Image 1 (cartoon, helix red, strand yellow):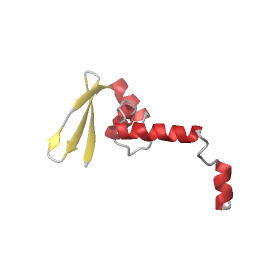
Image 2 (cartoon, one colour; image 1 turned 180 degrees about the vertical axis):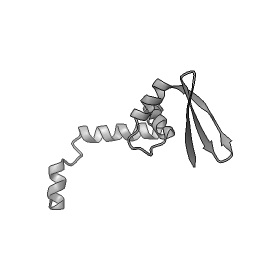
Image 3 (cartoon, helix red, strand yellow; image 1 turned 60 degrees about the vertical axis):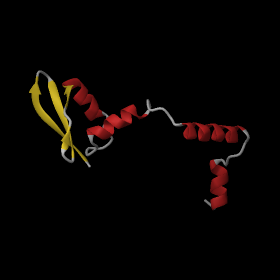
Length: 95
């Protein structure tokens, strides 16, 4: 479990974010501007800064080969017309 603590005392316009993981702790310092940007990117009040940062880097993480193959297969199925429209699904479900 990760807990993030922000020390709000300014230190040359830097704020300290400290995640505590069991007995291991890591501290990073960020500018007030970056801290405000991280706060603005929170999707909900109790979202941790770690979650915000993971969301930001998620798009840069390389997909593994299996995922790439599945995406290619799905694209081929769509091009071949092997899919259902929303209307078809609604009709099938009686909605």
